[in-house]
Image (cartoon, rainbow, N blue to C red; front, side, top):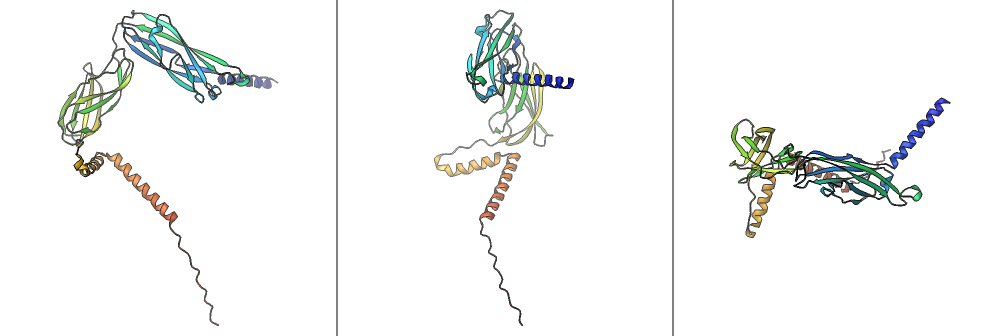
Length: 321
């Protein structure tokens, strides 16, 4: 008897939880918080809106209400304050954007944002409408201390056309409250063997990544290298300290050639020469594999459609009596 009661209790809890999930609506993270803001700063927080699988079968609508009188004018939602939750989608994103005015007082600011999901009438069993809500807490601190904090998440050097500068592309994640870029890039150049040092080059950025943002910047480095392949030992500096060090290989190739209408044939020939010359090892290998696969397909198709040889029955010979 006790086991039966326990079983009934477990089943009740299970199905109660299942019904709660079916009608569920949630957000992540449930806050917009930063203690690194300055007057004039821009800050963004991505919020994930999640609903149940049952609700996802129909179109819903999200209504957003900003409840922060002191800073309501600072806050915008990228999708607006009312937008559709498309049918078939279990989760969508919205970005909360904070733009601190230049003359904002230095202090802490609090508030909240309510996000309410409403399903159209008839979207749920029984034909009744459903309204579910979630609260996003706002906690901002505006100070006067500039914070320079960034990570480099990618570093590449594309192929370099002769007579053009080397471009070092950096992916930067700015976690600070002011626009930022590295101080400089130093490139120690070696030959293709990687052992013979050739020269040391330096470049400085001419652009920055905005506060609390991610993006790419290119740092030009002037050079006089001949065509060929090289290794570069890159050192990225900030505040006179190396914040990233990496060895990469790159190539200096012939500049793009131009031609007049009279030289159209020459232009076509040069184009294919440049195309083939610019291929790296991986591209060559891929082309070879594609060619082998294409050849195999041709052989298979030819075998399928080729006429089958007709087998002739040999005439029997009667044995002599």
